[in-house]
Image (cartoon, rainbow, N blue to C red):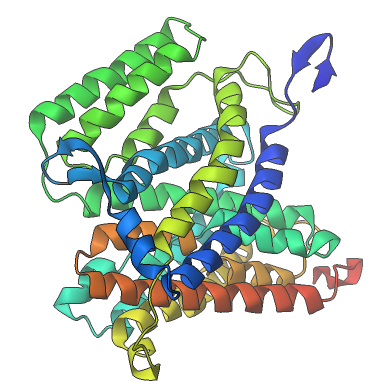
Amino acid sequence: MTKDKGRRVESSALRNFLKSEAAGGMLLMAAAALAMIVANSSWAEAYFHLLHLQTGPVLSDKLGPMTIHLWINDALMAVFFLLVGLEIKREFVDGHLATWKDRGLPIVAAAGGMIVPAIVYLIVTGGAPELLRGWAIPSATDIAFAIGVLALLGSRAPTSLKLFLTTVAIVDDMGAVAIIALVYTASIGGAALFAAGVLWGAMFLLNRIGVTKLWPYVLLAIGLWFAVLLSGVHATVAGVLAAMAIPIKLTPGAPDAADSPLHRLEHALQPWVAYAIVPLFGFANAGVSLAGIGIAQVLAPLPLGVALGLFLGKQIGIFASVRLAVAFRLGDRPAGATWLQVYGVSLLCGIGFTMSLFINGLAFIDPALIDEVKIGVLGGSVVSALAGYILLRLAPRWRAQSEN
């Protein structure tokens, strides 16, 4: 805590976010590695049986009986998306994306980083009809994983690069949420969608009349999640919708206000999401048996399209977009960073782990295709992480003469 003219305030949500995401990213790496080890050990059968163990009622005819895997992907990940939504709102209302001048570079970079990977994926997969639904898989960046790698570099990665990566990933997340809502929704239940709209409107009404206690918003958010689940739209979208209705108290240039509902909720959720939900998701979704998988399977169009989309598509799309944005004066290069370091961060944006695996589960039903995507996501993410880390570790630091 800090003091601001006698008012008790929380430490900055962004600083806490970067710290928790860095530590959470390292924990996510460990969880993913553990999942791969378990899935290829004598515990494999127990691992897969546990994930698909029925543990609840039928909440939706589309999903069927709830399993541990569904609770993680459709319920706990809604909390993850709630935090994502809070981060988006904070940055756009009271943070580093509060003005159009600040938004220019991250928006252009994120757009390039989503479009080019999709194009690479479609080229490599040859436009095969059965694989078309996977085009969005390599389009997202895993901010926790990427910031975790940046944290390993210590002072060799200037703060401006961490902020650049964070803002690009936040805009990237907005695109991913839109894709999930618009592309991966097969049918809409009108009554449930209407109920979701009423609940969402009630949250905005509470905001409008000045309610700052969090529990009414939380109760309505749970109802919103259930209504969205029944509507056919993926339930995690409810997390982002709920976040948009949480009140925020502006604190420009100062630590977050302790009486700001959005900041309080964000601080409360960060450790649970970073240290529990995201690693649990990684453990539940990264495990894939490598039995019988050889070079031919790894180089098949689907895993290769995902891997190259992440590794080549992300670095080309983001770095080229940043260069063009700076050339056309849509934004400035991150302060104190060289172009080589910006390229290194573009490589790190090829770590698509969490969101890519999540979209994988929406794009495909066939277990064989899901496993192929996991191989591509793991391969592309690991290569991007190693390449980005090595380049940033060896890149000369910024000097005044490097401006030109």
